[in-house]
Amino acid sequence: MNVAVLDVGKTNVKAVIVDAEARREIAALTRPNRVLTNGPYPHFDVDGIFAFFLQALKELHAEHGFDAISITAHGASGALLGADGLALPVLDYEFRYPAEIDAAYDVIRPDFSETFSPRLPGGLNLGAQLHYQKTAFPEAFHRMQAFVTYPQYWGWRLTGVAATEVTSLGCHTDLWRPKEGRFSSLVDRLDIADRLAPVRKPSDRLGPVTEEVCARIGLARPVPVYCGIHDSNASLLPHLGLHEAPFAVVSTGTWVVIFAVGGDLDHLDPARDTLANVDALGRAVPSARFMGGREFEILTKGQGMATPEAIRHVLERRILLTPSVVPGCGPFPDAAHRLVNRSGALTEDDAYVAASLYTALMTQVCLDLTRAAGPIIVEGPFARNALYAEALSSATGRQVIAVASSTGTSVGAALLALTSSSAVSHQQWQGIPSRQLPKDFRLYRAEWNDHLQIG
Image (cartoon, rainbow, N blue to C red; front, side, top):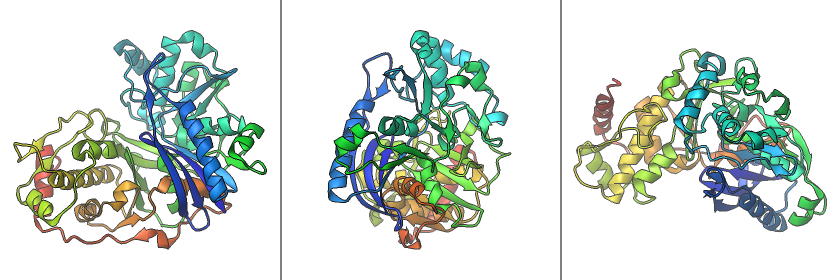
């Protein structure tokens, strides 16, 4: 069964054809995800994205065909639907609000013990976005007829059916009680309970594509559209039921998100970007995160390789990168990033090695914060970084399994279209090629910890 997956990442947007039974990507088309600065605030180019999706689906259907459409998208976004489309643009979650609006939101947001959602900057708490839009644009906000979470916005554009969904509501929105599986007290404080679209499961069928969409794609008949899922939870989905708890999934992209299946909810620290996510089955999962993909891009500028010479040089000289490269989030939100034991700029290869080791050590900190145990499964771009995976295995003393597909999110989203979506093929896994990190890495890691005073 071929499933077309619309994958809306913060950095890139993809249309992917997945052989769902084989858990294998067949083809993909990609474009950058642009943020527009016209209008009331920075917002996503949803019309441009949708035009890309329709053209990509037309091309992919002509070449490969597909039987269903599924959707996955980044968190911290949602759409306010009015009578004739959007009541307000879909806000970019990195936009920062005036101090007085932030302060007013702090007064009404629920306690961490209710939502397991830490206070995050900008609009990373979806409730903060809604509060800002309601406060700054009351007339437009009043025109909202339904609020939908972000994967479901694209489902609405395909089918005309409005919905919200548990994994998107459960990812640091302040709107959900993960332990109880219901809306938080913030919904009443914002006075939006009657305008929230119905809560659906990720695997629910929203309906067939509209006749207009069917014609524009060139389908012989309408195909079903599945409700969709938060992207990090899409990476987690294939492993639920395959591994016995405890185990951890590290979903990598713009964000590195750690899911500690079988971990400890009660010891999460809201000051260090730990939280509860909600998996596709509606269960709370201890989690932690940092903006690892964005940080890696900043540090390397997309250049460099992990050459033996660079590995040796970085370890021998103890060239360290300390958090936080992107401030305000992650396990060290207030730490000032430094380059240690090097006065000048790094070579491209040294920067790549130092960034890989930095990201691995940050991942280890996040695993520790969630009390994660058992094997560690790495999904997404960092699964192809052998130095990162080896350093993570060395730092944790645990097995690291890299998933070979280019992105776990698309495969996970495609599984929503199957009646049984609890397992992933062993053939997707790949071993970690050993570069045989020298013993110096233990000393390197100890010095990194000393600089952070984390032991």
